[in-house]
Image (cartoon, rainbow, N blue to C red; front, top):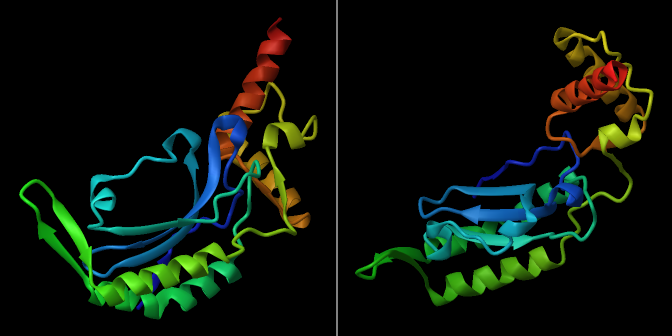
Length: 198
């Protein structure tokens, strides 16, 4: 079974200061589409489920939840996990059916599919998804005064500054937690303008 990796490896995941925490998902739809993703979720969404997942129409295994402020996913480990669970997901899919129970569509598993699902859980519980050798930065804290932005920096120049930040980060094998570095750069510029106006 082919498992699509939906992970964004270009940045760090999570930021407890902004109520985001690192988490991983393995999902299998009723049609047999499988995906794996290291991502982040709002801390307030820990127990939230979509309806199709709540009723096992789409099957979901969560793993890799981290207490760290932010994490960087290891692509080699994600690939290893996908390879390890692929034959088990095939068994789960073969024994997964969807029935209507008068109120909702509900997913059911045969005994073998349920056993394969438990074996998947064992593999995921032993997984080490996050890198231990990468630095994690919040741009506004790490850059200090070295952001290269002034009150005169235009919106058109902000992408170039961000590319400079990414180049510095790459040299140190570091990753930003910021979802939108352009927005961070704009905020830094606007703060400088406000300070100068005062």
